[in-house]
Image (cartoon, rainbow, N blue to C red; front, top):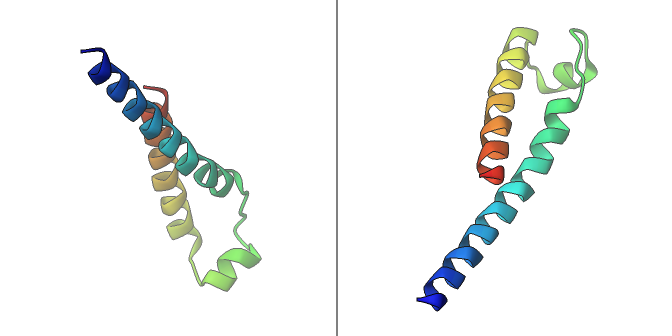
Length: 71
């Protein structure tokens, strides 16, 4: 039975590290400040309200990844 618990612990560790790896790029994008007249928004042809909606969804996804990473 000890081998089964060892494999389970390794699986949990691999999942946590993978989720942590996904978390870093999301945090970088989430913390990048964008104003109404941002060159980035103009280059992407993204209206400001759409950018705010994407920012909120990105925040929710990042929070979910952080909670799963900690669990």
